[in-house]
Amino acid sequence: MTIQIKICGLSTPEAVDRAADLDADMAGFIFFEKSPRHVAIDTAATLAERARARGLQTVAVTVDMDDAGLDAIVTGMKPDWLQLHGGESPARAADVKARYGLPVMKAFAIRDASDLTRIEPYRGIADRFLFDAKPPKGSDLPGGNGVSFDWRHLATLDAATSYMLSGGLTKDNVGEALSISRAPGVDVSSGVESAPGIKDLGMMNDFVRAVRDADKAMAGKGRSQE
Image (tube, rainbow, N blue to C red; front, side, top):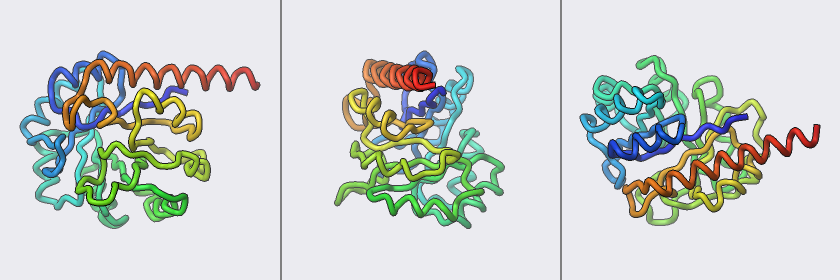
């Protein structure tokens, strides 16, 4: 098993290049003006072209965006994926997928195990789920808050569920998170930043190394039990 890595909230050529150098899988660009990671479409288009040239899949992250906004992003940035990180209904997710012909990643905020039941109407619509922690009280951001949830909740998921784990992941806890959840992919943003919206290249190195180490450790443990 190779754990997929998505580094989200990229906004500079240096961060994109480092993500590629580290063999990350996905580069996320955020279109949400309240976020310190928000990028203009022109900037995202340039960075996404750079990312694709280095083998990264590009993800446009939006929050309850209307068709006009999505039209502009898809035309300008040409993302490989659309991530819906708001309260988009199953019908809206299906409309977005049909309108653009792109795979859709639907994000859900998790606090209790019961929150996972909300994915059921999206099965067969969303191509992948992303599980983030519920924002702390008073936060205007649906993600990137640096908080986590109880990873044990994910043990209730069907093994065939395609998802990425997010929320408060850092180099120090991602190994434990993966060991507990057995998540097939991880998404990191604030956990590799020196300040909100500022990606730290050294922290990116450390995070990816921790994921790869955890992946190897789990693979070795699995083989030893065969």
